[in-house]
Length: 96
Image (cartoon, rainbow, N blue to C red; front, side):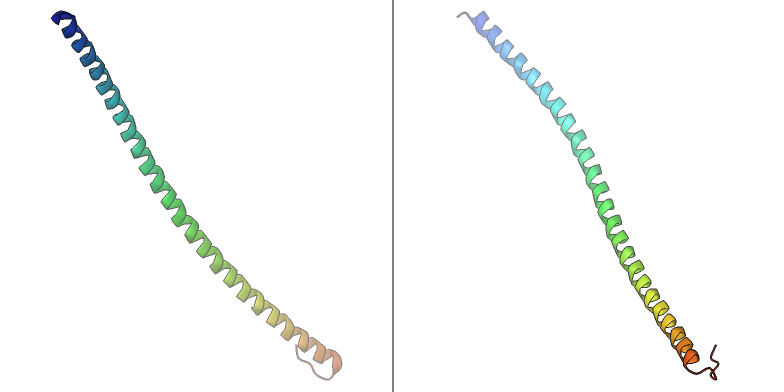
């Protein structure tokens, strides 16, 4: 093989390396874009987790409030019924 052929072979390999380097640069840019998108997605998921946690807490508080209101209403209904039963048993008592 002549020196010229060897030189041409080396140049061809260098061109391949240059092409590979350009491909790598393109891949690196795409990876950076993907990484930014992933970070954004991760932030959104964290916010959603935070919101879901707050909603669960709010729901628990609403349930507690409803249960206490329910108990209060039932106690009042029992009290009124007791008054009505007293009135039915003894017509002389007027407790209204």
